[in-house]
Length: 270
Image 1 (spheres, rainbow, N blue to C red):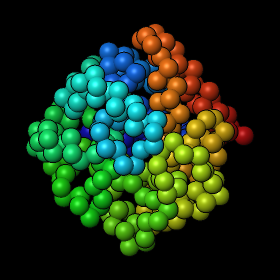
Image 2: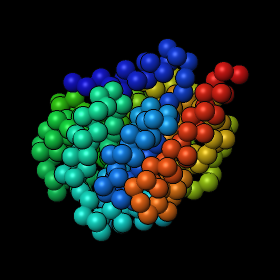
Image 3: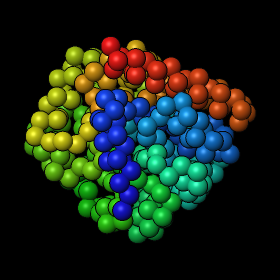
Image 4: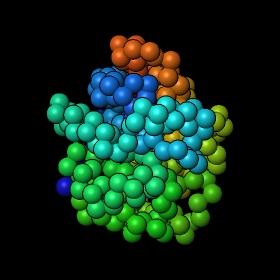
């Protein structure tokens, strides 16, 4: 069973650093560049990577990620290809955790048992299925049996009763959605995030990563004051969307993420 997520957060804690988790849509902007982009993000300072599984009806995602999913689907990107990319990534990176983020329908089409087996074999460390709440977690119980961590979302509207259930089952880390809305919106309230993250951490030791609304170095630093890690997706996806070649995509990925890593590290040293 993989312990990469737990080990990475333990290492971050010992070093007094904050985690940086970039999200990219698998297969966008160019399917053939996906693995190289993953490696480039690690080189630029990523601690974990969230790999989005394209889906035609992503209810939690704003236009930027919706369009990236549409482009990837048009190029034939699906779960089998994505798991192949994770396997390829693992050939030269055995330590960086990879979390798949997506929706239940593609997994049902692929087959639950097959997905659990293949995700584990490929080196996937966690799966965040947006439309599988903790009350329905048994739907994907095979993942847990294969050592793939179940990552759950917590929102500003999550009740204490549901939060307790999530704490009891959560593995790897909890993903806190910084506002009630879709990805890519700009509604970040650092004070509200701090209060909520502190509340989530009460009575538990699992790390909390915050996403939605993190767009640049300044917002990442604000969120990292309370969170164990920050997730940045739509702004990165939008930056990559303009790349028309593999080299351009790699250059854009590094140029986007490296300053955010530097800002997080500088803020910790203050």
